[in-house]
Image 1 (cartoon, each protein chain N blue to C red):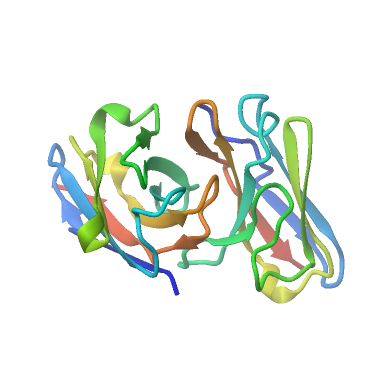
Image 2 (cartoon, rainbow over the protein chains, first blue to last red):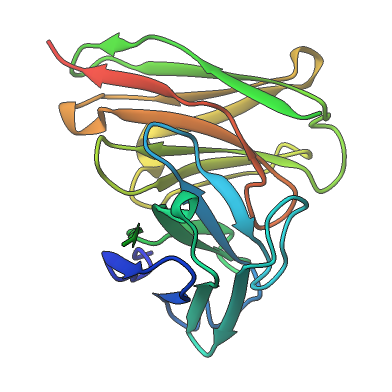
Length: 111
Length: 118
């Protein structure tokens, strides 16, 4: 069980779009539609932003969009706003092995 | 409204056993499909999943920490307990518990910082 691979950083100007990738294997990301994304502001608990690849919980703006292709999932944030600056973590639930794996996190900076 | 709160010692000595309690409200761990998980985060580092327990007492552990972890639940008290043996300074982290509908953690506690030091 290895951590999912995310870029350490990403950035964009207000109003722009940015995409964060999350690469796993066919045993996790590629094998199941149980990819989720979490936003974490400094000294705060993570907040669920996307679940089951592309579903948004109630209250999450539709500027946040999730997708998946093969073993790589992506989170796209459009219309960047200052409050989007945070760390973002992807996660995958591997049904066959019944374990959860997180990515290393991506620090999103709004320039 | 679902809430979760972690509690336990803030400081443990190396080799000691850590016991953390997650007290929750707004759901029952006897409801089919529901689980509670523990996740930790060392200062400045990434999230790491530790363990899960389901409504039917089925449990799962991170393969790398399985030998040191035990997760249990007390449905009557709405609590989930995580024990971690043989604590080491590298286990210093904020420990979170979270509600798991199926395959993702939708609501998290605020976390509790545990420092391992002699």
